Image 1: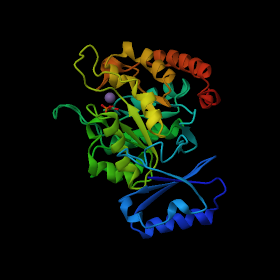
Image 2 (image 1 turned 90 degrees about the horizontal axis):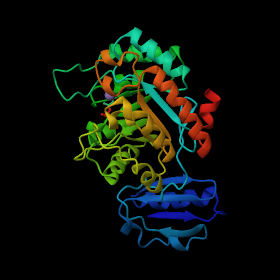
Image 3 (image 1 turned 60 degrees about the vertical axis):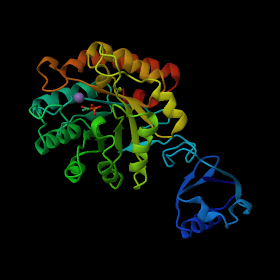
Image 4 (image 1 turned 180 degrees about the horizontal axis):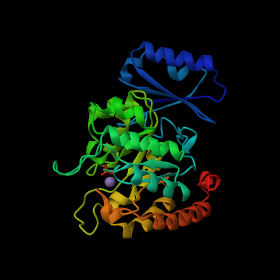
Length: 343
Ligand code: PEP
Ligand code: MN
């Protein structure tokens, strides 16, 4: 349930309500918006049945929330969440352009690709050092050595870095190098990992599980947020369907659905959805038009030699062309001011 406070309610009145609820053994989540302050209540509401909250002078209304996710829900937080990563904002009209190779392969590869994506307007660098591969015999990533190269490239070109964490055993190591943690599709319901990420102070890009419903995906976000970390960025990367023409099916309608149900920013990853570079640019543009707060794109200067996901990687030239289109489209729909500043 949520308690909507009157615009005239004071901070003391708000704290009094929060106190009452917490003393009854429930959790609260306060959202102070421009126009409204809301106290979200999480837990067994029957414990509040003999408390006269509705009749307090500072309370405007009490609304029951039937959705299983609470902190991730727009009911609990009507304004868009804007995630700030070292001064780069994501959400509320600010677009994240997360670009880079699938995997860190070498210093020369990282430097070449990072320079190219930075020059074309990317504002985040991505690359995996711990890779979730279908085959145990395939390249598993460079590990800590890869994290070092990723961080070095990010520093050199002033780009915050996004990298995947696969398990609870390596999360502390990854936090030493990353600016944003990525939880991949295969771990989207690894609840132990979600909880650990919830205890860290780095923002988390949470990819949609390849068989997850939107509600289940938001429940995964709730796992992170309920541990205290409110900086979650959702990422639609395609789901598994009967279609085989593409690697996954890009569920673009997830963007407006998420926007309705949640205040969290959502970016799209057409690279992993498509599986083929030819389809990536139109889907990236479509994602922005649909209202996404950014894109994640795999880029490689020599995709035919890439150790992983070469077939879906854009060459730097194509990425540059795409960025020009993104900037044009963004200005038509009135978002992405931050890209112009960067350009
Ligand atoms: C990746 O970003 O390289 C990756 C493995 O993504 P996903 O978890 O979406 O497959
Ligand atoms: Mn990949």
